[in-house]
Length: 409
Image 1 (spheres, one colour):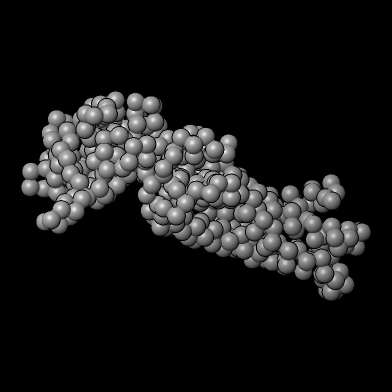
Image 2 (cartoon, rainbow, N blue to C red):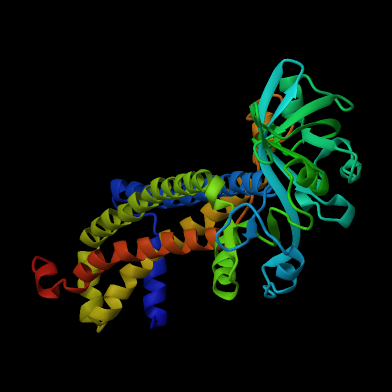
């Protein structure tokens, strides 16, 4: 527990301008290093959070996040109405809808593209929220049963030269039939009735049709679908939801990690490595405090000895210099957090001021998501490192012998 005299002396030493010039320089360098390290970490992590958030919205918002199929099968669900009614009520699940899915080839003129064809039911309101806001031409309501309409990504449309109203041939991987001439794949002409743009690879690899039309194309029996897909409040909760469903149902449960897990693991690894590298800057600055404190203690040996002879205990001497080190850590962290938040909020304006364009051909700036927990953890970690750096010099100061320090005075 700090006594007022400890607080007074510690703050006085921290704010003192007298002393060796080199010692003062090291002290200021440590303070500036902590502030710059915390600021850089706040800004970089905010940008990385923004990129991760955009990937989550643009990719995971357009694909099934958690899927349920019959036990022993990964492509069919026989009685989806019964399975839907028996689903446990989980707070992370926003809703569940049937879907039909297959791999296929889109042929337009002489050009062909491989795509994941998803059958959805927009007439029942079963369109993922992120998709419902991504239409750039046409409407999801154009996917009517029996119309054999198709909604494709804007990027795929540009690659193939397709516009709304064009007819494309869809060749499905499932539903082929054997004839005397060999297997004939399931195929049918679809009319492109809309274009969507998610701003990700989904735009060129996923297309949408009405579930009943796609089910007829791949010759699914009446009432059977590929599975149930669950919409979640947060797509990153999919592993936890999948585990709970495996424990509470006898259905086959899978989630988005099977197709996109490696991508998000790479993003997560990149975030951790960036945090580690910038944390090393803070660590170096924090341990510069150790050098500064050692120099200060050498300059103040006589003062320490006098304080000891006046009755200041070793514990309080130790507290004085720990407080002096914490002064740099607390003020440096606070200044770094303030600067980091200000730069994060106005980063796109700053980049625009210098004429920097991060995304060529795009008016969207850098995505920024400020995580309060990360900012707080960064500041606390910087203060904790500074405190750890003060332990050794403060302990050395507490063990100074007055008789040795004042021998020649």
